[in-house]
Structure formats: structure tokens, C-alpha cells
Length: 299
Image 1: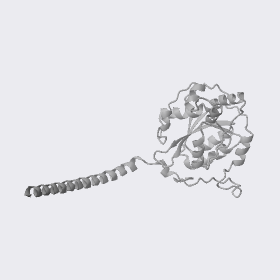
Image 2: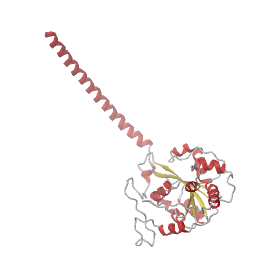
Image 3: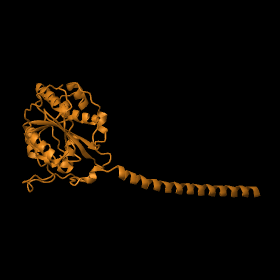
Image 4: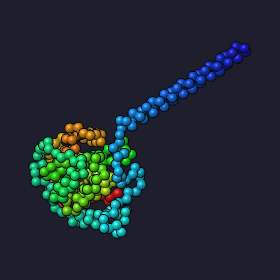
């Protein structure tokens, strides 16, 4: 009987000792985490200087609130914020799609090494003047969302038949509205590939609305192509191979690496020639020119 009591007492003592040890270890670990956490936060703030913290003109906050369209100058009282400000122009183009010559050069023409890096307001104004003289140009964008809740446009690529332009939309974020008129001009066709996200990002970040657009991905769907990826089209029509894993790079990086520049230029440079080939196939198939537009809450 005495031995049983002794065993019980030993077990209780051991349990108390284990509990006390666990509590001590937990408290020590918690204090260590707090010290490392504060140091980590200091290191993070020093290293990760988020560019969006310097944006002065933020048109859409980090929320899922319904998107509100901007009101066109001179039509403030006529159009609701829930209605696409260029609905009339878009509807007309859908009913009367224009015939467009997208590319006069050979689709396999070399991209070369020459391009223009646009990162000042003056350069952007000059580019807008150049684009006003064009009948068609190609567009692509690169988005960054890793260190931002809803993300933001970190780069825009624009290609005409003669030149390639890379726009630093981080440096130009607050003045990108300079391009609003040329993108909304119904007499100028803008060529995209898979424009669903691009259209949303341009409207959300800069109130840039795309009026008159040819989407090569949508053309692939109409033509029942076996694939509609840009990588497939680049290889099929231009004999160009591209590494799409670069799409996941950190496009906030400045300067961009040579590989990122090559990737970004490739995405826009060949689009005009690809669009010309697809448009020719659409006409041959009796399908005409397809100008896909998007009609969502934001478009």
C-alpha cells in the first residue's frame, strides 16, 4: 500500500516537472520569435521598399468594391459610373468591324536589338504622339501581385511595325493617363493576346480604356486552333521559341535582366504579324475580322 502511494507521488512529481519544463521552453521560444520577428520586420522594411507606396494617383484601392468607371470629359451628366464610358463606340465597332492590314513585314523578320525604354513623362508624351499616327499597334502588360493584395501593372510593351517600346509603368504610374486618348481612339486598332486581364488592369490602374481591339487568342478560338497560347503562335507563325516561365519573374525589378527584356519584347513584337496571319485565315474561312470586346463589371 505504501509502495503504491509512493509511485503515485512520483508520477505526480514527474508530471509537474514535465509541465513546468514545457512551459519554460514555450516561453523561451515565444520570446525568441518576438525578437527575431521584430528584427525580421526591420530587415524586410529595409530591403522591400514597395514601389506602390510612392504612387500618388491610386484609382482603385486594394478591395473588392465594385469598379467605378471614370466619366468622360463633357459627358459627366450623361453617363453613369456603372456604364462603360465608350459603350457607344464599342457597340458600333462590333456591328461594323473594320478591315485592317496588321503587318506589312515578313512574319519571320528578326526582332533585332533596338528598342526604346520609356520612363519619363516627356518620353511618354512623345510616344503618345507617335502612336496617334499609327493605324494599329500591339500591346502587352506584365503584372506584379506577389507583394500586393490585388497587384499592379509593372510593365507595358507596345510595338508598332517599326519600333518596340518598353514602358516603366512603375515610374510612370501617376501619368499613364497620357495614353488614354490613343487607346480609346476607335480609328486605331490595338492588338492583344488574351486581353481579358490586360483590359482589367489598364482600366483599374490607369483608367485606360481599349476601344478597337483584335485579340489573337480569341481569333484562335474562332478558328478552332489546337492551341491558343502565345508560345504556340510564336512557334507556328514566326518560328520563335519563348520561355513562358519568365512570366513569373519579379517585374518590379530595375533594371530588367537581358532575359526579361527579350521575353517582354517578344510578347509584343510579333503580335502584329501573328494577327495578320490569323485575320487572313478568318477571311478565307468566311468569318471576317473578329474584334472581341469584354463586357464585365469592369469593362
